[in-house]
Amino acid sequence: MVLDTVTRKANRALAPVRRVPFSPRLAWIILGANGLALLILVVGMLAVSETRRGLVNAKIEALRVESELIANVMAEGAAITEESPRLIEGDARLLLRDLYMPREVRARIFNKAGQLVADSHLLADRVDVIELPPPGESLPTDLAEDARSLLTRVLDGFGNWFRTEEERAALERTLEDEVQTAIGGEPVAGVRRQPDGSRVVSVTVPIQPVRAVVGVVTLESYDLDAVIAEERQALFPFILMAVIVSILSSLTLTTFIARPIRRLAKAARRVRHAKGQRVEMPSLAGRRDEIGELGEALREMTAGLYDRMDAIEQFAADVAHELKNPLTSIRSAAEILPKAKNEEQRERLLAVIASDVRRMDRLITDISRASRLDAELAREGVGQVDLVALIRDSVAAYRTARDEGPGITFETPLEQALVEGRAAPLGQVLRNLIDNALTFSPADGHIRIYLETGPKDRFTLRVEDDGPGIPPDNLETIFKRFYTERPEGTAFGAHSGLGLAIARQIVGVHGGTLRAENRTAEDGRVMGARFVATLSQAALL
Image (tube, rainbow, N blue to C red; front, side, top):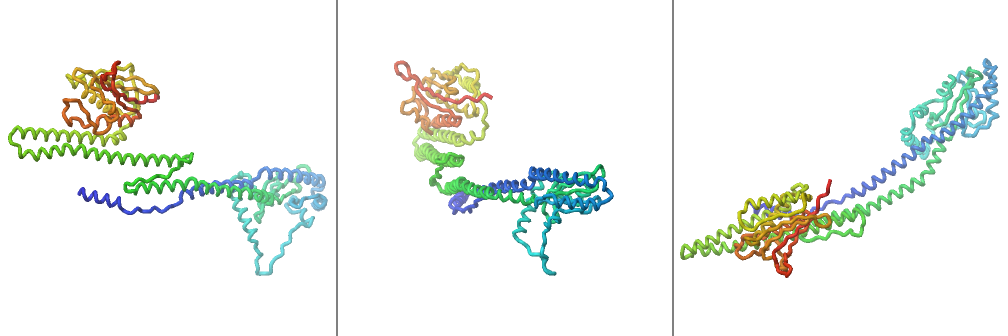
């Protein structure tokens, strides 16, 4: 069953790489986001140009002044002729004929019944004549004009969002509504929509000699749509420039963002299917932005992954080597056991086998702990650990469990020493250092533990013993896995050689350092070993 599982995993690893089709989603997102922002800007500019309240208000004010002037003149001539409308009609026509009106402005006068009395366009012969087609045929259509009309209606719909309720109501009024309202004595002003869809600025005021309304004057300006169209045309070069800039910026962002990310994704897939070979991630160190940081982070992650794989391979080789020695000893003793000549030789061989079995059990236990160390450090939550309390509790536990051997003391000027970390692994570091000191210290020796504040907001932990010290060439070697060098009298295989390696690994995970040195007297004589660990102080909240 195990072989089948291994075979299935091997088949999955050797399966051909499934090519993931490239989908330029990020490029489309960049283009879409820029395009949408540009569209909103353009539509907003064009729609806001529809409302141009300042322009409309200026036209209304000018038309109101002129219409009130006409109404006052008509009111003076109609003061005694309220019952003679023909006199008002004659005066109205004469007034509008003699009064200068711009071509885009139209003046009309209505009597009290709402009937048209005078029209400046009729009097000035400004009525447009349309040639009708033969019966049964429709009027010819102008596609460009239709397109402009459609655009105007669409933009007018967007512009309606920016209009007030009063302005929307004014658009729906008719000329008849304005005339009837003015006959009632109230002037009317605003933008009105004509039956053909065009808009006019209209002002209608009553003609009142005293109090009675004898007619109304309506002035209309027809150039509002033309002015808005001119403003819109003036915006088109800027809109075209904005479109070009938006497209160029989108292409630039795609080139500088989407393409490097695609390179990183391809390299990551190559790493996934490299089958143990090293794959170099593309270097983006020349970029001083987030993409460059991402590329460097992936390079560092890949390098760390390869280093971890090498460490696992080396660890497996070391484990195989360490297990091979007791296995070889057990096999030799088992082969010789049947040939033992007496009971004493048989007991000696059985003792060798039992010792090697205990050694293998110790090795397997320590190897299991070492292999689970990273996972346990990742699972456990990080919190504030008081080193003073942790060391006092550990020293008290050793004193309680041991009746003889080297003494253990703890000295510190600190009442509390908080570090960011995990209590259980830090306690294991302390136990490993104390166990190592107990192994090398003589029975009448002493183990001293010091904790004090070091430089750069760090705590310094020192564990000293009275042993023979450490050879200068082995001050770093002792931290390698499975390295053992024990004093005389210690049973072979009693230690796995993983304690100091695990201690340094835990301290390194906590952002600290662990080193070894010798204690020397004034004459240079080695008085024992000293292990120095440094850990950063926890930030005060």
